[in-house]
Amino acid sequence: MNLDIIHIIYLFGSVTFILGLKMLSNPKTARNGNILAAAGMVVAILGTIFLHEGEVNLLIYGLIFGAIGLGTVVGWLTAKRVQMTKMPELVSLFNGMGGACAALIGLVEFHHNLDSPTNIAIILAGMVIGSVSFSGSIIAWAKLNGSLKNAIRLPKYNILNTLILIGLFAYSAFIVWSGTHNETHLYGLFTAAILYGILFVIPIGGADMPVVISLLNSFTGLAAAFGGFLYGNQVMLTGGILVGSAGTLLTLVMCEAMNRPLFNVIFGAFGEGEAHQSSGDGSQGTVKEVGPSDLAVQMNYSNKILIVPGYGLAVAQAQHVIKELEQLLEDRGVEVAYAIHPVAGRMPGHMNVLLAESNVDYDKLKEMEDVNPEFSQTDLVLVVGANDVVNPAAKTDPTSPIFGMPILEVENAKHVVVNKRSMNAGYAGIQNELFFRDKTSMLFGDAKKVLTELVSELKALD
Amino acid sequence: MNEIIEFFTQNKDMIFIVVLMVFVGVEVIGKVPAVLHTPLMSGANAIHGVVVVGAIIVMLNSEPTNYVAMVLGFIAVFLGTLNVVGGFVVTDRMLEMFKKKK
Image (cartoon, each protein chain N blue to C red):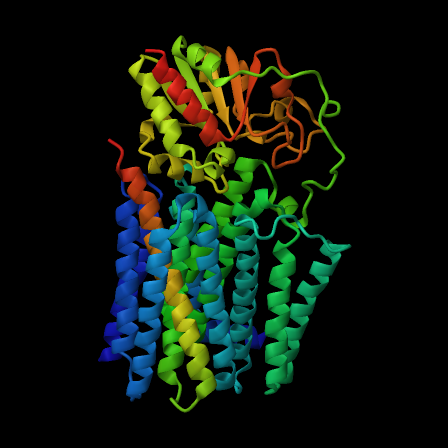
């Protein structure tokens, strides 16, 4: 009887996951979708515990609830306290935890399934994918929070990684066919998978981390699905495969937005030709500087201003100041909107989340395709901490590493003001000729500091 | 060859679910605006936390005297819960911000 009810519960859980994901892809229903999926998850977990057939020692129940309780408290507090700028690395970290969970399941279940080669194959697949996802996510997390700054590339790392990958397959196949009971092999495979995860992510540059996280996200989904296959557990299977396939598609969509084929992300073509600089070397003329007071006057007399926020804004935590600036300008009758590049920030949509945090209207966030025709009717564009996404070389210079990436065509506006901390190149490591154009002025300094000055200058104009 | 067919027959329900879910996953994400990529990724991240169900089953099926299984299972349930709870809460926080707009 219990066994029959659990199937209904799992069906319910699967449906909430599908509906939840569906609702998450629409701004209006997204929040409820998330809550729906969470509710389905709670029901599935409770059902698994209470409808289990057979005798279970009370101690085990205690341990399970202890682990769930601890995980809930830690997860809840971490998620509630994290600053929104730090959110991408947190998602990566949680993803790694899921991967580790799948790997541990494999480590334990190995002993229970020694007589079935099929089950062993499924267990090893789940364990290997989970381990790769775990160690890869931890590296991605370290890269995003800055503790691991540079892409570390061992000599011939592509060949090395490919060999390790083949080795993982071969080792797994050996364990399955030989029917070995030896734990050393199990832990050997586990260690190799962890190592592969590290070596897989470590050569990839920070700018590509969103893609990597999304990819590892679908890996963890796959690992969960293998667990579902092992237990004949439908909710794990549906949840896992759903995330695996949706995550893979999302990864490809992100790659498309950045015009970076997935192959290049993984096998690294970025920053490979470090000496490369588009259209000549760094010193291509002089830049014009503008101060906050002059800019305040200029903005005051503009009709239409577009703000292009980039990661520099997020790092400087300037999202609240920029909202204040927007408000002041609107009060003076200036039309203000934000032009959001699909990969602005550290994750697609990250910038939208940050600006939403400081109460910027959803309608004021314009996506690239919609806003590009508007630049020609714009008096002034304020670029805050963005670089590569406004680099005209992406359209004009076929030798540029970012050639073909869709950009915000800010060069069509009457004036462009770029806020940067220095003349250093952007994430792609290339110079931006936009900065040297006649209609461009540079506003040097930390985004938050400079924008605060700008706001007080504007107030002083009254 | 026979082994493959046998494997398929034994697991046909599961294999059907896998294939159909692949299409559902693709279909569901199909037309998502770029704005929602991050919350969507985060929400999907929480959903694969369903792997915690597997970790719970591991513990339910093990003997309390099997210390390796108990310790690894405990860690697995803890990490899986972290994935689920953290994932859903952080997604909710992101989406809450979109809601506040008028």
